[in-house]
Image (cartoon, rainbow, N blue to C red; front, side, top):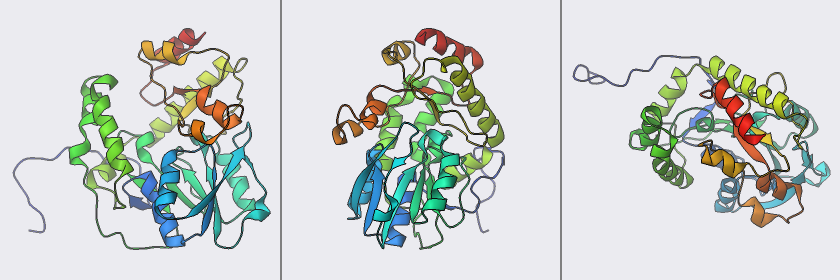
Length: 313
């Protein structure tokens, strides 16, 4: 027998729609970036101030020099392209999965770039442009990442995920609070995990998801919030027709995060380390400190969107 047969049965997962079938499947978004930087061997990388500290940690671990750049209110770079020299690269973040249209414009200006699609799982890859993705921000999976890069290398080991599923299982049977500690532990593990191939479990879970339904729900939820807050939101980011968002950015002159949390609506912070890298009056500082990123995931019903709006207003 090539594999064992009989005995007890495995978890049953349906075959859903295929996504990123042409990508290199790795064990985290961070290691997707690591893969690109290792095979390309860049001497320097330009990164936005407004980025996850995991990006900086990965760059530092590989001993690559980096410089920060600023972004404007449209979340687009303030940058002089001619300063990029030979063997240097520009990294742009597809913020919250809503900058697909800008990414297509950007790669026409500059070919030596990496697109951070960790927040844009359903963004289409662009031929000839390196990019990486993080499925667990959009799906209930323990880990995983995808890389588009035409410079290939061998990844010897495959990750194993079965011991890090507890937060997902608890979230299914209970509520978010029950599995939060397990979730934090899994995040710590991923921060320090070496580059490996995607686990069998994660690949199967991604393959079982109803991706079209997920896309539709996220788009509808984003547009619902956009319409509700259009007159008061200080950051105007309409959704392009083919973008699938991660969260909805809300910037108003009112502290609402604690009210939402006390009503069991949890919002992420993007990203706390930015407060150390920037000055108080910078846009990046304000995006971190003042903007509330409302959840719009596929599990949120319209009645819950209405409740969130009422709590804020």
